Image 1 (cartoon, rainbow, N blue to C red):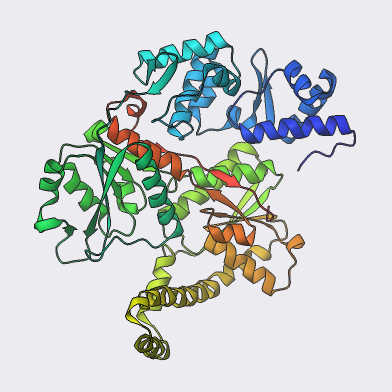
Image 2: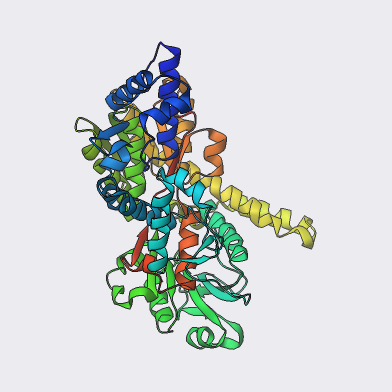
Length: 506
């Protein structure tokens, strides 16, 4: 629960410190003297504000080291930052700086901010920051050019080419269904422009009797990658029936591969193909326990102690991992908190429900679409696909709504539960529909969080977890352009934390 401060000066101090923690949850806070000057209050008032936030569990202090957000001191999955809190300043900033590179905080095709600005961001002196940059140059992570620092190496003007492999059910184009996929390709095209890269989209269909890459003149993928000037491959595993089979074909060519973990097959192949070393790196922002851990920590910091997890997709590993993340957060950050699973395990995702709709399409609807098609000019007929998809999506959501009702009723039956974490934004929206239908006012509804930060979550004004897609793409490209960089030497799998976007529902 947030601290209630009756005195204006103390209230102002608490609000400023809370905002600093929210903006930089893994950075040490400025000294009390600097905070007092920043807020315009006395050092005594700042000390009292710090004491109030310590009681909330938002911040912690270390004798002789300073004041830190609790996430820095207690996060069991942020070992780099935890070490940074214990080491000397140069080592601490080095660890945090490398983590910020992986999170996509810095653009690797642009110079770093000036040293004066970096000293403010990392709360260190100018000489310390100079030493940090010098070490990164020695490690060949940065390269200096005059007064500016760049990542890895300077590129020439020649454009590089990267192939993107994705599922395509025909040569006409790849399959893109979800909003998250559209966001991925939009951000990828923007990053390619900034990096002076040409993208080649190659469709792969493993729903045929023989898996096929859609390439000109019937070329093999091995021949095409070897003879087309392609420097690396991004594999999108979305929708593939056998993404590991596709990955195996790509690894025959001696070029680096960035694999986007978006299905179970790719996730299970991590250990199997780890011997490829720097040639293959997996990038994951949604399948690990981190999303659930981050969402749980956010709610616990808000004062919630009894949290329900609602998922009709618990056959999937990503749903199970989100629950594990919530349970880990509860165990690590508050010993008296409780997570209540409200789950069903027959299905893996919403596509399973869409398949039922497509298999049982109502004859009347089909006849209606055929009649409408005959009356529409040929140039506008492609828009019928959008209309048809909207109808199918509506029927899918009706199936999901009925399927989720027992889970919602179960969560409502426990009056101690004050927050609900939903498997994704689609389920969060259906939950809100149910609560509205039952006449439960928004002020009496539990805090609700989904995952994906979709457009619907913005419209419905419910909090949602945003995956770090931009950071993921930035690192995928970096791995392909600079596969020997030490930044990727420690692990074959890069797992990125996202951010809870707070809205009215929480």
